[in-house]
Image (cartoon, rainbow, N blue to C red; front, side):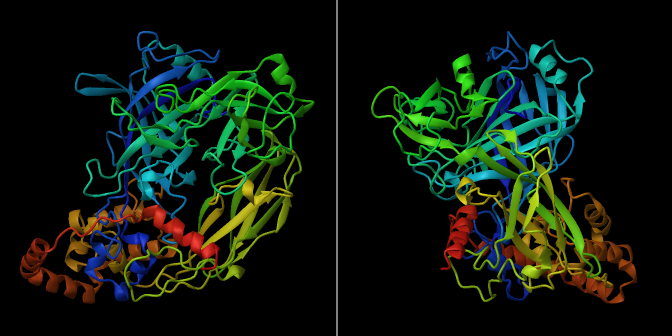
Length: 638
């Protein structure tokens, strides 16, 4: 049952996310109006991290505890040597990259090309015992204002779930009960992994800039299950993004071992920890006693009283115990007795709920509950990059999963729809830029798919999306951004998170001309020019032509893929490679190379003088918080 399994490893530490934010402002894509100021810090410049490399790293992460099939666990390395080992990323290649699908959809960031390793530290070296490749997957359940006292992206939290593939085990691993149990349960050569990231530092003047806290869990993957989400018991706020006491979306599973596991790592509000803390800066906000149990009156809404006759307790959630988020991964586990199982069995399921207060006392209120009728629908993949060829339609697919109370719904009716035109996305609220903000989601005719489809006996359906070139509706931005909603018939949209959609970047067909233009990427990714290739400089492009050829030829999952933004259509990629192969036959370009080489000394002196005269600019909020506000304005028609 994915990472949410009795057999699981919990690790915690820090992560680094270092995206370039010049391309967070969609109007920066208009090269005609681009000015050097847009590569400076500030909302009227390149936002909060214009010099970002795009890297995503795991740092200072260690195994905090391991859990076994019988429900026992240990955090003592003397009992299981895996405890205390390091969880690292790659040691012999580039770091993974974190990338948005489009400047007008920054709410499904994906990690590409990351390697994850379990290693034992021996002196100054790390001996890898297990490594795997993190399959590219976006985050889910992004929510803002999770941490009191913080603002912007620093207050936000999100969950990444994926699988580790291409597993490589050490020839002689240590004697570990956990590793034995984990290896015995592996299917399809994959492991499931979940990361929750929060407390991100997005102020370049702040110590630890671009770093944040990560809580991770690794467990076995089971054949046939989705890789990027758990198709389990879904809890959802009844109104808006959080419940009345600020608990948000979470998922649980009730396994064949009659053990209920709830993942609350990304669901509980946080506050600054006391000054006596020696590690984490934040702990869950005290919400009183939280108890999970079965609602015996299935229609009871969030906020309703819960007590004898209407609620059967299963167990108290130990969320206030020290280390619940980092040492236990925010996962609470409960063994169900026979009476409890009677309400969660083949004769019918009672909705699960979390109650705040003593369920046998007063007051006791439903803090958050399972979705109405226990319905959940998930899509995978829910981020698609589609390339039509030669103006002919092309078909992309995604799989929809329909469940009820954690069980697949055979022959479920699924409904699918485009969201339509979306205005004002991908732009900040500060500064006046000359370029217009393009509309997303149009023309709707570029996508064609059925409005409804039926799941098969296994509760899944393949949605086929036929796409034709959108004919450059955004002008200076390649292709178009589309959102598609999905749900079971009768399922309310309130059961979905505000950003739970299928996001599509539909590229335009692009006939391969004789030579490409690098200027836009040089504008939007300044660190490339500062550290490696000055993409707007013909001499630099010529000097690094072999390296560019390699980077543009790599698979999109490779950490060295270029461009880092991964928004290049196949046609334009072919253009670049064709031109790089024949660059010396381009007489006009070679003339520019000669002129650039002749002017290089003077230009270098001018650049140095300019850099000395400029300050860093002002730090700003920016980031996904700003994008989400623009999306809210768009949906409200403001």
